[in-house]
Each structure stands twice: as structure tokens, then as C-alpha cells.
Length: 169
Image (cartoon, rainbow, N blue to C red; front, top):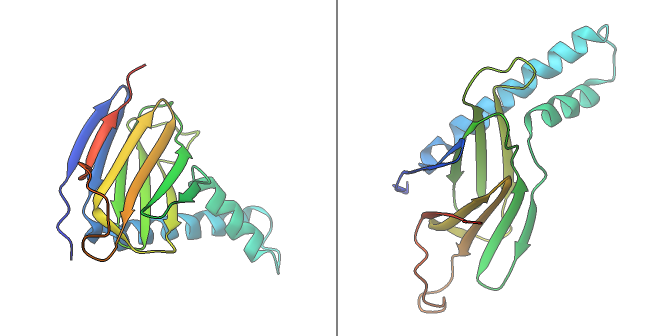
């Protein structure tokens, strides 16, 4: 298991942190449990109709997914772009593994109109190095860039590391 550095960063009303890849299965399980409970509630609310399980499941997923990311791939890196709701204030956790990422946002205060946690899940086609990832939050635009795992010596030299950079307007 990779022992990823934990980085905390406060930006405006958001708190952002890279967390250990060891939390990936826990976050994925939490997301699936939220979706299952919400799908069952939708099923019950609609009178328990037969044959509508996928509709309820997809509606429940959309309630807990905060963004449809755009993923761009170049020769040496993969970049993910997503819009993260700015209001109300949130805690943002980034959990990366070599083939996937889960980004979890948690409301910093209770708002009964919104789910307490929302998620973004993405899978990579190529293996990346979770230790070398950069994340930038500019307003509500979140950009995550990770270097692909390549044979030794084939990657250009960078100062990347696992860092968080604020953009200043």
C-alpha cells in the first residue's frame, strides 16, 4: 500500500486534503450505501413498482454524484476537470489509487436541502502515480492532474510532487 502524504489546504470556504489510498474502498462503500438507501426510499415513495429498480438506482446515484468530470489524456499525464459546488462551504477529500480516484465533498454545516456528502468517481485507462498528483481549485473549477506510470527515465523532469496550488485572481 502506498503511504501518501496527507495534505490539508484551506481555500476560501473550502478545506481540501489528499488522503491515503487505503481509504478508497471505505469511500466507495460509503457512496454505494448512500445510493442503496436513497434508491430504496425512491422505490418506496413511488409505491414499490416492479421493474423500475434501475431508474431508482440511477436517480439515487445522480443525487450523490456532484459532477460529471471531463478527463483528458496526454502522452505523460491524465487530467480531470470538474465543477465543485462553491456554496455552502465544503471539505474536499481526494483519494487516489493507481487506476482510479474518488473525490468526496462534505458540507461543513448541515443543510437539509442537500446530501451531507457528494462524490466524484473516475477510473483511468492507464496506471498513474498517486504520489505525483497536483490539484487546483479555482472558484468552483477543480483540476486534478496525475502523471502516468512510465518506464524509468521516460518521464520529463518536473517539480510536481503531491501539492495543492491556489490560483490567485
